[in-house]
Image 1 (cartoon, helix red, strand yellow):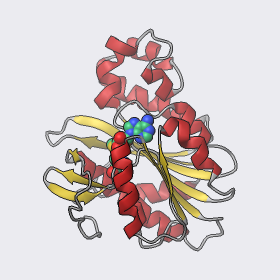
Image 2 (cartoon, helix red, strand yellow):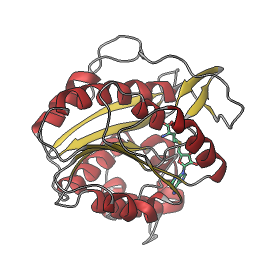
Image 3 (cartoon, protein in one colour):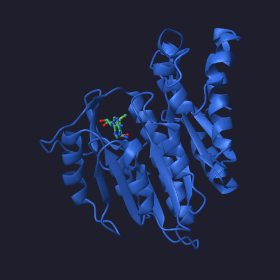
Image 4 (tube, helix red, strand yellow):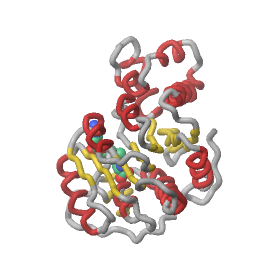
Length: 273
Ligand SMILES: C[S@@+](CC[C@H](N)C(=O)[O-])C[C@H]1O[C@@H](n2cnc3c(N)ncnc32)[C@H](O)[C@@H]1O
């Protein structure tokens, strides 16, 4: 259950989203709280929040208004040193830029209109060395290229990541029909390898989601990440949609996520892997 007051309709764009968005934000808000509180007095050169698919800042979750991810981060009790927000859609970007002004931050947010995969370099250039960051990476589908994660994972900064991995939304729905045998397919670009082709062809369908997760995690290990966790986000009817995958280079990040992910939005206890 969120501790934030509900947003009001301000006449700017408010995208309609499904109920699963509330689940996603439940974990994000809980992680932001534990992360900012737990790290605020540590000797980092700043705590930064990166949101490469930021949205409009307010959304309509099946008839009820709620905060989008960048404005959840903007309202965290222990403040981030700086927010870094990228959004491709001009109308959403404009709404977000106006809305964020209502939330005073230690430093003016970095706001970028454009493609996350191109603008990531500009974002990272504004993050000081020896700082600690949380990157929330929340595409609609297979839009977060693995090369973008390589930029975030560079050695000089520590960036923990919470990634929406759209296995049942896109990857598994389209892999055989559209992506198999195409060297630059969206799935290969997102995973950073075409290893998935052989592995999916030679295994039963019931294992495909786990295989994609394992390949993605192997790839993230190759970038130096060591601590992983995930939560499965499903439709109301229980059908899987996507995984939120958390990764950190430090044990403490893994412990934080494990702690906050035990409780689902409805208060029940959950386990994924
Ligand atoms: C799932 S929504 C994000 C919602 C937001 N993170 C939240 O939780 O409130 C995905 C957003 O990414 C934007 N988008 C799509 N492709 C993008 C890209 N290549 N770069 C940056 N933003 C993109 C869409 O316009 C949309 O607002």
